[in-house]
Image (cartoon, rainbow, N blue to C red; front, side, top):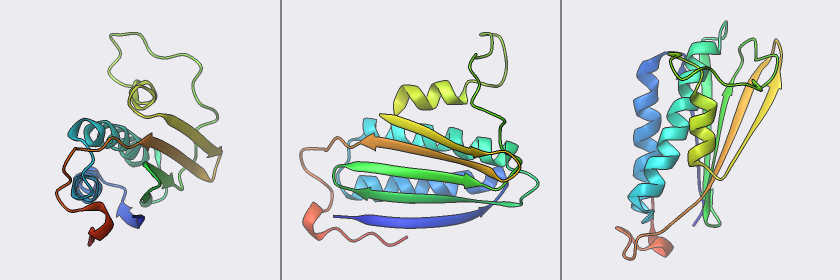
Length: 146
């Protein structure tokens, strides 16, 4: 089963729980393991938090989700200034910020960045799905409304 949806959100933290709910409910309804769902939601939360924090001056960002062929692909797209590049060093352990990329790398199978300085950043996350033995809704008949 293929599921695709897109959410355009205000660049405010209040939108992040909406993304988590829509994506988490979609994955759970297909019978994805809770561990796998948690990994995806953690990575998406980090990427959305970065879009909220660094996506200015634009006042919106977009989350595009595609679930199918045994994997989940999520793109978080902002139209902010963009990073000049992905950092090559990470902050010291006592720093309060700057570990989001490390967290995302630790919980997804693939991560890539399309950074255009002055035009925005797209973070692409991909995770291969693990399935529960008995999905809540049979995969071949699942319908998800978002």
